[in-house]
Image (tube, rainbow, N blue to C red):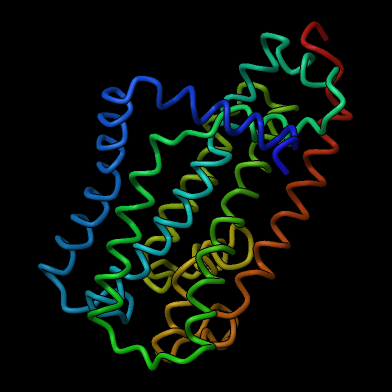
Length: 268
């Protein structure tokens, strides 16, 4: 395992980021801003209304926390794929193509942004507090649901990052367009899907399946009755996060492979 080239690359990247510990600590603390601002947004909403999308304050915070942790984990590992257009313009990607390793794996291990880990820790702490204030009928199945939800949510967002990067092989300058789906999905995942209109609910359930990241699993976790678009039972769909993640990964990898075949070099 120690000789695995990916493990070596990741270890070197992580060590490089922690050389200047003072600067690293400041960046780590600064990354908490997104967590704090998101929580304050929910707090302000509940200062004016008793429920949001059928959820009380602790349940809504739990949705936010799980969605936040899932996205932050994906952002930590693959968020730097946003820089692919720079590689395409500068020709840096050509160097990756010459190495005897899968290009996507090389790009993923090219940078692990540890400074973003603060968001993961803060979101996890918020989830623990929210769970302490909700009535969960704990069982082995519920514990498994929570663990699978976070892992599947992170995998789903990672797939969205890969899919967005794949589109850049054709757009090159379309970062803002693809980011609207990735970061828009992140924002939608942190709120009850039921607060959106029907078109948006369909979008965030079946196209960019952000509802599977936190909202539907929380309904299943708390045994809250609800329905997804089309009248499908939310309690059942709450267990389908891995299926949603696998579906997005399938599309993302197909797009990535097509993009690599389309790419003919920086000078073309």
